[in-house]
Length: 301
Image 1 (spheres, rainbow, N blue to C red):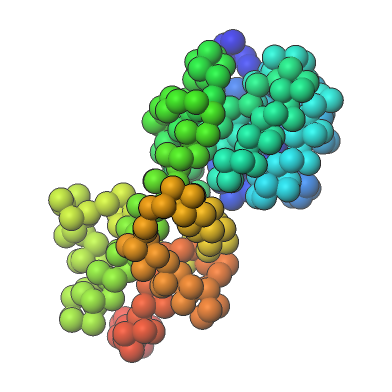
Image 2: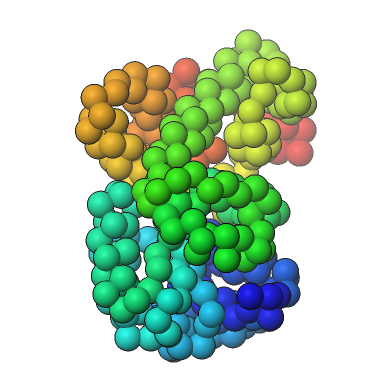
């Protein structure tokens, strides 16, 4: 395969649209499909092509990437892909689902001679737009090696982590840290602000230090200016993933006390109406819990 590969991309949501755009910018021909017409149109405006169905995308593509919202959609798309494309076609599944659901999709596609790779990615839309995702590839190693150059088109770091399903196991570990770091960043910000520190100064001083994290630096910047409408990732994804992670940990009899504690501000944020905002708005929930109101800036007075 070469840079003239045709890449099918099914699922052009918050994350998928950013990944597909990066593939276009990397020189690939991208044929995308989403049930929402506006998302297909946006891909065309960015230099991609629009497919009419998952089967149409598979028929026109060398490799297909799936970035889907639910396991039910995954199974429906897998059944459609069985009838499209050619035998031996490689399909990358980059979403976060239960391993059993990905295994079921793998077996469905194998009936048609296709190879499904479990290749979830770590990062939100903000990082995806900067091509700063990390990919965890697992499954058929030869197939993974054949599409590494495609993964380079949407991720700046990639790893082959083992047999099918190991990608999700690694993703669960990463997601735990992601959520814990976000809640910890919010705790730090509200404590510092209520104690009299300027939020911009907190972010500036801690960023890049040994106490910092990627999450503090990216989401902390949104917290400083309360930019919660910025399209990073709303609460629907971490809330969905929390159920998968909890079940995965229970299967292996591993307690997750820190993760479960870090989830509590997420529940509070959703209860307070922040569900559709970026998850950095967990800070707003903690400000309310701390009975803290930010002083108005000179511009607001």
